[in-house]
Image (cartoon, rainbow, N blue to C red; front, side):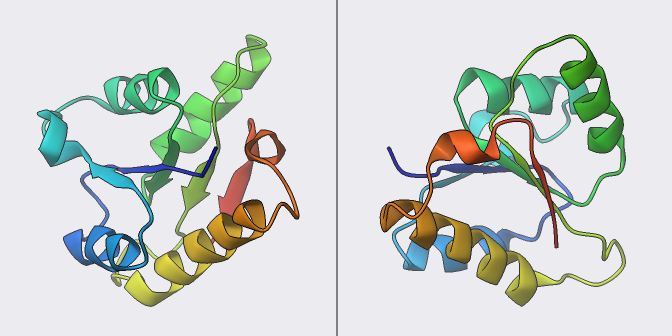
Length: 119
């Protein structure tokens, strides 16, 4: 199964547009009625739907730690350290590279379980 992504409100719409142009599935929180949701809700939505989360929000690092300490699994977090700038190209490049590696069977989705990919 291919990687699929979920973006929270901190990620520019252009990231989803560019990933979709590469036929990579991405769900924006606004598209599922979660634009104003708490971070815990975003995180749980990604987990429930087996989506890799794309974010710039530091709170997800805390949620990751709590989740891992509780022996629970998530499908990976792509975390952009550049909160001020859009970093659109870097985010798209990183997500695309991981997507392509898994599509080429050079890895699997399980390689990203409980992982944080720093962009």
